[in-house]
Length: 113
Image 1: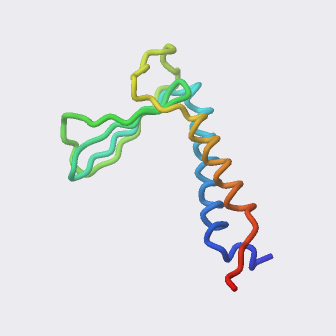
Image 2: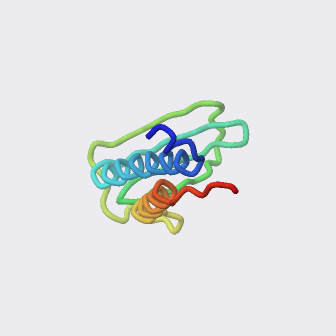
Image 3: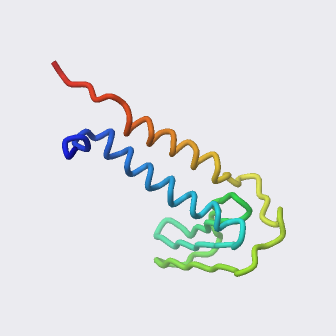
């Protein structure tokens, strides 16, 4: 059984499955809470907002320096409050990662002749 995971495809498949599980948790949480992550770096400051089943990434005008900040509100905002045009839905990303991981884990291993 140990040799089953020697192929790089199966290792990448396990990583994408873990990413799909994390995104599924964030997807469910976004229906009940509004989370905002602020990340400051040397190339600029960014805001990742997660609410109403989707997330979006915005670049901020102000510089934060090198820091990470997380804010959450216990009550989610009204539907459509953050309905920006650049919102990515969690369901599409999660389904894609799940199918990709299933393909990478279950494909038959080819041996070089």
